[in-house]
Image (cartoon, rainbow, N blue to C red):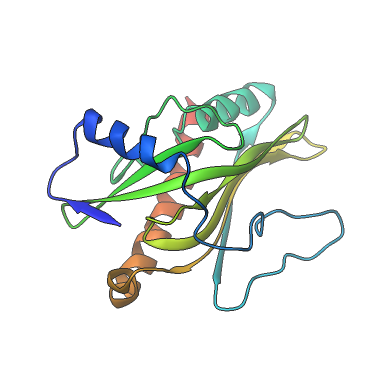
Length: 194
């Protein structure tokens, strides 16, 4: 985990991304957020699960708006997060840097896309933390629609703190995780209402 007093220049983030290409996941429970048909989710010991969802609208237009927003990383709350590069395609194996602004400081957290799904009634992906991420675990983002064409946005995270600073500031980290979920849900809903 690296902390900056201001948002780092692109050249620094590019250098960091280049080094992350061979990085391994910081957890062993790969795809732990993935739900299999008729199987309950198994939360690894020592991890916390956060699951949130919101109805974002109805119909094909809402579906396409939400799908495009996720593909462009717009479901991330712009008030305190940035994805670098935000042009990264949603494909398994691709790596991004999740930049989080906490109390005016930017924290750099690398993550790799673990799996994706693109079905007529379900679209999304999950990414997992790499070794230099402050947390350990995985987060999934997806939209789904039911038989009435109602569309729901879901976020599921299974995580625990990794570094001593993250463990020490765990109450603050939990506050920001909740803030992320709430703002992400509202952000995607707002995008779909336009």
